[in-house]
Amino acid sequence: MQHFDVAVPEETISSVLIVDDHPLYSDALASALGGVFADCQVEKAGSLKAALALLESGFHPDLVMFDLVLPDVNGISGFISLRAHVPDIPILVISSMTSHVLVTSLMNEGAAGFLPKDTPANVIQTVLAEIAAGRKYVPKDYRQARPAETPEDLLENIHPKLAALTPQQQKVMKLICEGKPNKQIAYELDLAEATVKAHITALLRRLGVSNRTQAALMVEAAHAQALESVEEPEALSFLCR
Image 1 (tube, rainbow, N blue to C red):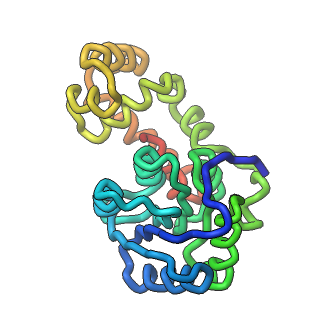
Image 2 (cartoon, rainbow, N blue to C red):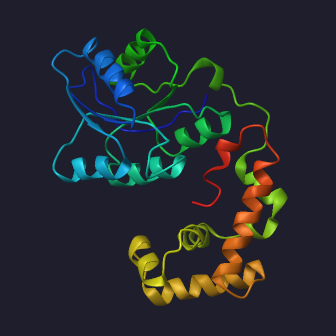
């Protein structure tokens, strides 16, 4: 198994943010936490927006427990956004989305660990202790890379032009897919608006299309084709991100 570096608390966890839109499940997680860490402060958020608001208000937990499917985000993009806001806080992902490709991508993006949502409470408690001790956790079934195509492989096979975009062009393309104007793209990527325009011109030329709408439609078509090509469609939710 690959080694993934991330800052994690040692020995104890005194505060946790649970990000999940199902109150009963959040309560169950809070109960599991109480069984491992006495007097642990637990805050809950039912959406990514609510979680970010809590963090921006000054709450700095030792750990975030994060569900990938929320009212305002779906898939790895929500994790990436949260990770960007709190790069120094370990994030344990607990989700019903359980494909090998997705789990590997999460760990590569800096997750402290991954658990399926149907994990028993006693196992969750063991995992929490592991993370508090500074270790990563991935279930045994996910520790060996399965011989299968990654989303990037699928994308390259389905549409080589999209796979050929540079990392910065891919970031711009993601925001185009979200309908963001150039000014907003420039703000989110911390670029000059002229630089964004240059990236868009270059990616349109590389894709062989004449405008942003055609580019977004190309991505949508490639994504739809990829969904038909694998047994784990949820793993491809981050093709345009």
